[in-house]
Length: 284
Image (cartoon, rainbow, N blue to C red; front, side, top):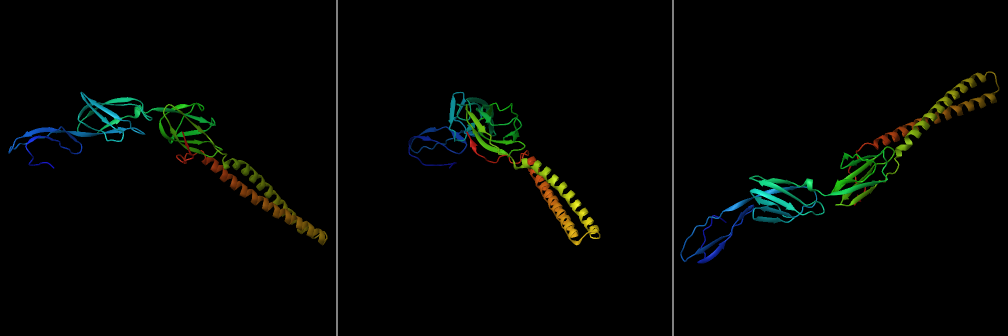
């Protein structure tokens, strides 16, 4: 550890200093017996350089005049101050690219997003009325024609009234077509409107039958004054049956209206993108 005073044998020696984020040139020194010498070792500070992109970073080659530094994909990129040209060969995620960066006393950033490779995304079984979301944003499609898309992981969600939401995680590869087969079972909400109308019809029929039964029951009271006891009981029993049946039909109608309203509300909910990002499978 510096500062350092050390006794070493006479002769020629190579002194190398090391410390994080600095580069030192080796120093050669020749010492005679009983000679004392002071060395000043100078170096260059290494500035961290970030790489903004997606997926696996390619190997980088940094060139400054006659200096070349190669940085493996898994190694940190640190360079001395100055102007550097940084280039790379394309891989599964990036096209060939190069940028020039001016490195000063603070960390720098390489924007590699413009060099991201493209793949192609295509849909099958996609209705023209469907709403498509890509990575949470609405995607405008001209029919279901394939279109270019950045390589990497993406999330697709398809929503359409009358169908259950479809969601999938996809991985798009370079220069290839990734096809998503949209599979959407019919939503339970499609039964909402029939249930509403059936319930409304039963409710009206039940109300009418209940009213008629009450009217007949009122007539049976008057009938008891002019008819036989048997006719009176038969009339009264029929009126009671009509009244009870009307109530039952009206109650069933109310239940069906409620069910239809709930189903129709769930159908409306199918068009709300509240399930974006849910996994339905991975497509390549």
